[in-house]
Image (cartoon, rainbow, N blue to C red):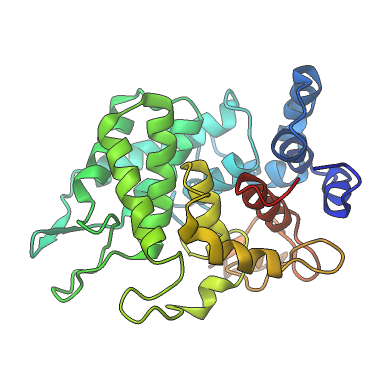
Length: 322
């Protein structure tokens, strides 16, 4: 891609160093390590990262349960990693330790088994596994236990589900996507063979459905999946699925073609992509109801930087951009 592309120019003009860093690294493939390193060092001072780390307590948390939507450490860390927080960042490491202590305790409660299928909220562990792997914590025995547990809970069709209803026999896309991303990052840094096999099975789950189609009818399983959102948290859409498949090395599978076509079709005349739905609300001063409130204003209306960046990433990885 060229810097003359309107979307590239717009992303490079961002006041957020995270956007500039990934645009240069992933889209322009800048080889000047010193220039990239200079931008990377600025990421903790970016407005979004500063907001995500604001209010951190000495215990690494933020005064709420780690899973509190969306102000707990669990959710803040997912966003921090997607924004490229430096792996050596102490604040991120401290927050990750709080989450790891909580999950280690939660693992003492075994998964419910109904009709031989382990039923567990896998995304609760999958999202942090991606964080731990990114931050260089994959060799921690507690992290390995999380990865091994996710492999153990995997269903025969390749995914995961928390539904205790005996009639539930198909994996949930919502539980499976974040889990796939976590295991993908874990196996990349550990070369764990069990995790690698689990990743292959999980990618097949999504590809066998062409990322958005019903297994039984071949029609659109959920129209919301075709709309673009950011952040996704634990939700699902085809852009996030394509992003994860790209990281897993499966973006060029022919079964991803129709989803890629849809992403291409959503590009505006100006060359950007915009959010078509939201799972967050901005925190307002004096607001006592913090449910689904995010400490970051990710932007509402108009073109969206993270969605545009991710759309260009997947299209480039699929060989659809110069």
